[in-house]
Length: 295
Picture 1 (tube, one colour):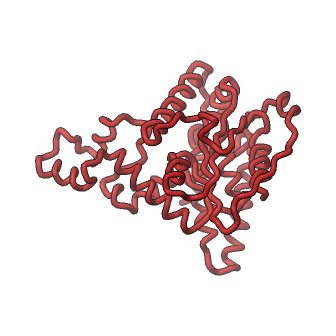
Picture 2 (tube, one colour):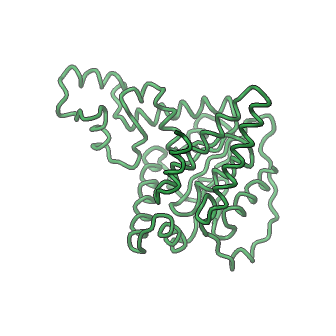
Picture 3 (spheres, rainbow, N blue to C red):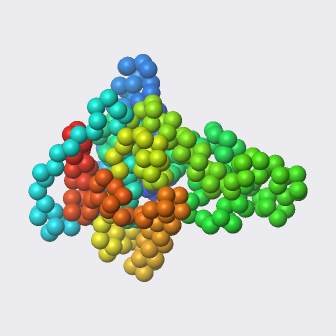
C-alpha cells in the first residue's frame, strides 16, 4: 500500500511535497530500528529509493534553481562550528520556489538526522491534545476559517452553548490556530532535548531562541523570476499563475511569522545564515551548509 501511494504521488503533479514527507517519515522511522542488521537493511532500501527518485528528471532536487553566472563568482572561505555536546538543530525558512524543502530534506539525509516539515508535524500533532478535535496546521488560513475547523462539519454557529464552553476551556480560551502553535512549540522543544533534526518553518528559530535552545537558523531564497520558473515547471501552470502563487505563499509565510514572532520574515538580521539557492543550486547549497557546519 505504501509503495502504491508513493507511485501515485510521483504521478501527481502536485505530489512532490507529500512524497518528500513520506520519504522523510520512512527515514526517521528506519533510524530508530534497534536491531543493527534490520537497521542496515532498511537504510539501504531507503537509499535505493531516494537514488531512484533523484534519477527522475523532475525528481527531488532536480528542478533547476541555479544561476550559473553568479555561481561562477562564488568561492567558499567559510568556517564555523556547531557547539559540541549539543544536539544539531537546523531551522530552515524559505521563500516559495527557492527549493528550500528539497535543500532541507537532502541536508537531513546527508547528516543522517530527522527531517520535519508541515505534513510531518500534522501527523505527529494528531497524537497531542490540540489535535484530538482534528486540528491541523492551518497557518495559511484566516482565523475565521480556522475556527470553523474545530470539528469536521460542525461550524461554530451550530454549536450549543455547552459545546462552546467546552471548546473554550479545551484550549484555555485560545483559538485553534494559537492552540496548535503553542502545542507545536512544546513539541519542538521536547524534540530538541532528544535528537538532532532539520525543521522547515514553524517559526522554530524564534521558538528555540525564546527557550535558549542552541540552533542554526537559515533563510533560503532566490530571485523571484527563477522561483516563478521553477513553480511553473513543478506545478504545470503558466507564468501569471505561478507569479500569483509565489506572491501569495510568501505573503502567508510573512504574515504568520510576524504574527507569532513580531519580526520580519526574510530579514537577514533575523537569521544566522541567508543563502541565495540560485547561486549554488540544490546540491551546492547543501554542501555549503555542511561546510559551514564543519560536517
